[in-house]
Length: 378
Image (tube, rainbow, N blue to C red; front, side, top):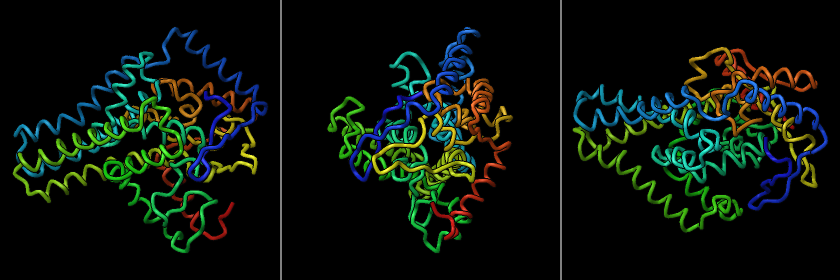
């Protein structure tokens, strides 16, 4: 679990934000003790196991094999090439959820170099590791569901309302219908402008210092990574595939829409549902509860019984366990979920979970509908 004293975002600067160190202290200590005992008693590592390594090879292959097949001329039929781009979209999402997510949390390996190398795979699929880590590891995991602090619940466009604290607009009453389209644009934003915007914003906030690199080095790395990505993903296909340039751009967009929709839906189902809370700090920058209780109140699992679903999405249907123990590899979450659930109930704390993926989709749709009403306010 994270340290209880952390920083929060207010406008463009960071100020201290403190979670209670007394409320829920017994729960926190008991849960940590039981999780440590699980790994010790079973003589297993909290890092990646053989299954995780097989999954890593599978996801990387799912992304790069279709590219090699079409670029080498093995596939020349337009429909087969389109299928390759679609598979790359799923591979991109798979790498994001099942490989780089654990690596950038330091949960893949006890070797920091392995985590660094695998975490940088996100650069090869169009995003940028340092800004991703700040948004996800620092902001999302620290300030889960806190408006203007957790960027994951800051709407991607003004016509979407994710929290009851967001200003209501009449168009929001239709968001349960149109929001899904904007989810698919998530990676389009990543590979174009978001990383640049984030890098400069985080510099202003003082967060790029967490990378222990000078801003100029980060800027150069981002520039080089984008050039490499656009070269192999757009320029080379235009040069070597017998498809018009606009056709390549459409196929590239297809890949992004598939990856973006998959990633956005998986992450949003865990936090924007009727059960989860959207707490706000007090005027003196304090939160009501401890960090651990805050995670239970703002996070929900979904589809815990589906082994295949869990395997593909990197255990992110066990978001409660992931938020409480982000430094533990996701392959262990299913077993840990029993410990977390029993401990939470023992201390009278919530443990939210939807039985299936589709029930979570319905729950999120209901939340979008509720937030589309002017009466849905904080």
